[in-house]
Length: 501
Image (tube, rainbow, N blue to C red; front, side, top):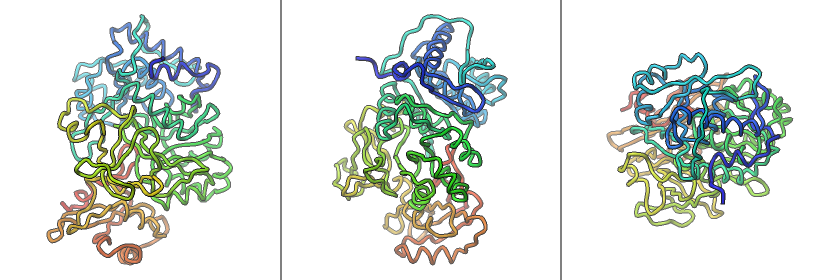
């Protein structure tokens, strides 16, 4: 039986089919991708780099970022890093990961050069030839034989976002990635006739696995964009004849702002589905997307430690439930109480997972491993429950739950209610310290352009829809809510930002 490796995923595809497209270059066919993967492995091997080593990749989003990840992870471990980091951040991550080499774009002036120099790590600029297929490149002139990785060898290493503590290292094996890309391609019924538009950053698990590798697992193709551009999205989607795309809720909202003004254009795309993950999709946005694009909206639930996907709403004829993240899609999923007992449908507890796509543990972090792993199960840190039909509802991150005088309140629930207010474009509720109650509720709100709204309006609206103890005490109107590197709205840290800690 063949090993479950990234290289075997690529090798299985038909040479003549297109794997990648982009704005500037000719499409890359699978046959050309296979040659590239083999050539880059030979070139790295010629430098004394083995399939047990790590290579950091610091490239802008686009076809070369996509192919460098595929080529590196087919031979050794890829460590993609955010190209927007500062020198100090690079020093932290490079010191943590200890890569043998750092890949950068031609004529790079990225801050990683300084960090790598300080740490004595060799840097290699990728070499791109004019008029070559999209994503093709060279690293070194010399080539030598190399050993193939095995399914339990590390193929990708990422850090957790580290919102409340030091980011943790998550090593993911070939088998983890093979399993996850298979789970996602099955859940979305992907085939070689599917063509996706990638708008997610390729230093993040969502874009790497759900878009890139799930497409390749099914023999489909991906348009490797240079990043998310809401203004260009509809025209690109039309010219590329895409069948689906995946994004985070803030991206969907930005696309909706333009698509709602041009519904005909949106519906002419005839998308098979739209996928949302990495943060909770407000039901109000689900409904607007469904109405504007006239296609199923598939909300999924993923995290780095699960090599992305854990649950997903199914495709028609099964139903998609707004506010729910679907049914288990690959790994086993259960809800446990604080005594590690599995709960019944309807009972709220911590969401736990087990399966071939789940990391075997954080690197050099016994404390975190002891907290997060129990009897083969990984504890996600998310709170939720299964409804009677087996669909999972996330009520929030355990560390984000607001404890107001003993009442446990999910800020996500309040977000979803306030999002229906006709003047609200975005909202994030959060807890802040209160002398009497321990914690109380605040909300940061972005108002839609051309509309007006007062604190009283919001509170009166909340009063009609929510129990009294769930009404935010403080409302902050802002032009923008802080987002993480993937466009995910940041809840943790907002109390400090507004001077409430």
